[in-house]
Image (cartoon, rainbow, N blue to C red; front, side, top):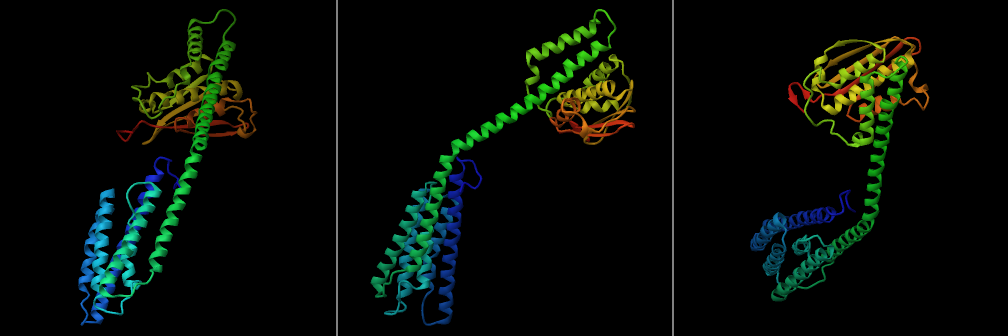
Length: 400
């Protein structure tokens, strides 16, 4: 019975909930006793019962203090005040009915139930059971003492004993449940750790697959597009930088897609570099739209958008059978969108082979990892359109 809370928070929350429920029950019992006395007073004007009603007011005040602060000395004070109040309540009440009062009457039982439902301080179940038992004993002792003085008949209060038994059983169940939760905590912690490690492993595997696809296969495509002879210096430099990045494992570091500052301009964006790389491979790229809106992307989202766009353009070269594509950039109030369009042979995404990782790893998973979305429209023989949407850092002039 941990209420879905962490193990270190459940005992406090359960104890507080039980105490609050107990205090509500106690208050209802005290108010009901006062109401019944006033009704009896109204029905029997010759009987003086209002002093008994006044006797319960200090008990209500002490109950309020226990509910507000719930400390051990206020709990003890409530028991002391409650014992005195019950003694005066029974004494003043039974004195009005000499020889006929019985200590287990419903009116006299209500304050005793209120004393049993003390709630108690602390989070230990044994301590809370002790407070309830002490309240039951003190309430019954005060009743017997008052009845002895007025000559009222003493009878075992079955109702109060039943309430005490129910409270003890409920607390015992809470204690057993806590012990089971405590014993299960190591297994739950291991399961949570294993799930966390599995999630990290999946993210790294997906990132590694995307990086390998972006670098190794991209370099092979670049080399294949080059004429015979030595590689161009800029291409050689790009290959060296990518290899250094892979060996240095910077790609393993998690970045906050929503953190960091926005880029300063289109010229400084990785999107422009991705398009230039595709042009270096021999693809004609027609660029249009609101290019300045990429300045609203964080570095992490700019990089994800750029690498996904580059992969879409590489796919055009490798699979579409055409040498031209169109890239449209535009922004809305909440996101930046890029659409890559070609008039190539098209394809059916669900029928692509399992070894075709470009769209799956380098586009979809990469964009989803920064909170974006990807939509693909393609029909064999009519071309392909890929729509990439990424949340913007700045929305309506306010940074998110």
